[in-house]
Amino acid sequence: MPPASGSPESSAGTTQRHLVRVPHRLRRGPMRGITRRTVLTVATGAVTVPAVSTATAAAADTTTATSEGRQAASGPNPVLRTDLVTRVTPRNNWLVTAVAVQYSHRIDLRGGVIPPTAFQVKATVGKQTAARTVTRVYPNTVAEVDDRSDPGRPGDRLIVELDPNDSNARAAGTDPLPLDRAYSVRQVADVRTPGGELVLRAGPFASRNNEILTPVVDDFAAGSFTDSSGFELDFRLYLPEGFVRNPQTRTRYPLVLTLHGGGEVADNNMTQLTSNRIAVTFAKPERQRRNPAFVLSPQIPLPRPMDGPDGTDWTDAKVQAALIELIDTFVSEHSRNVDTDRLYVVGLSSGGRGIYSLLAKRPEVFAAALPTAGWGDPAAMERITHIPMWADHSVDDPVVPYREGRFGNPGTWTLMNALEAAGAPVSRGEWANDLPKAQFEARSRELLRRSRAARSHVLFTSYTSGTTPVNPHFAWAQTYENDVVIDWLFGQSR
Image (cartoon, rainbow, N blue to C red; front, side, top):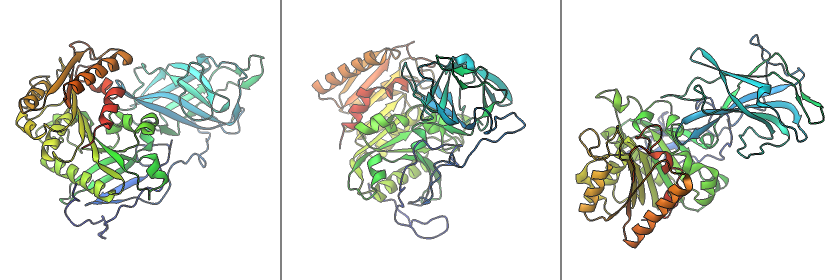
């Protein structure tokens, strides 16, 4: 892409034409929204990063006894800190899945098991206090959930896992919930080894959470871009590990651009990462080991498109102009490290609409696209027949109808017909959206095989009516867990 037009100026008025790169990413850093994260400020084509580390206050942060009954560090089981562990899930958004309690000493159960009834957890959100259901408790060396059937290892932390199906498990609605010190955890029964040795004594005091930890999300830096017209667009950015270790490397990485849906239009610079797995899928460690990449996740500011005539989405002229300028600027500033033949765009709902519009506006830029539950202008399809695409949509989508679409523009089924009429053969498949992962990927693999046999670079998956869990509009839950689709995306090049 050509660099963005305009004279890059910082908010202080000094001209900046280079990117100050993040010297290191702060893994597993605690979060209070984004205020404790490295912040990138991008003003009219320049990105600035303060050379400070805000990864953790854990080393200096100790538990203090309060009138709320917080357990003192000098007690029989000295608690140093208590953190919430959250998870971005495919279908249930952002959930608090555990509490990690750090002690001043190592906990070794010597083969013993802690019963869930030994701990009580309560959450107070919106002035409503309710218990959370404890499902497992085990020691660990880090503040992370261990998904193995025999979890944990001797360490200075106890992981208190919580039932994700609790009605008060969510960490966000349209915005992140106020979870600072919202959770309390109390030990109500002694913990002993199988031989009867006392390991942790029950007590009357409760600990409240210090921080909120979200694996993968915590690895995204937070930034803001102001384009040449003065329009501001927040974003989150994931940097591949090889680039972080050596910013002077000449290794070139793909760039994945994620376009969120209308529900994530906000001023929090968070929910575009936490409302679904469209971004974290590309940044999770196992995917980055296979396909290291930059992941750029902008967020449209309020108002939301469903809030009235002033609402915005990715096709809004000022939003799209800022988005294009942000991409151009990032690629220009990282010209040594971004593989411009492997720029990918993924989006869901109004983000799918944004994809069709963006591809038509810049048909020479992107190597491939994944639009889910989108809609758009059939007349624009003739400009993007050369771009590899894997689209999907639920047949019974009530929000963005499969055929009719929204706001006078048709849905995916009609757009795929328009692409085919314009000369791009479309390989189609239909199956249930609630299949187990192995079966779902097997169906995807078969569709991909047929597309290759037909020399088709456009694929379209329809999900049978009544099979998309939670809401038929949420077709994307399986998309970003589907390794066949993600592998296909990274295999595309201009």
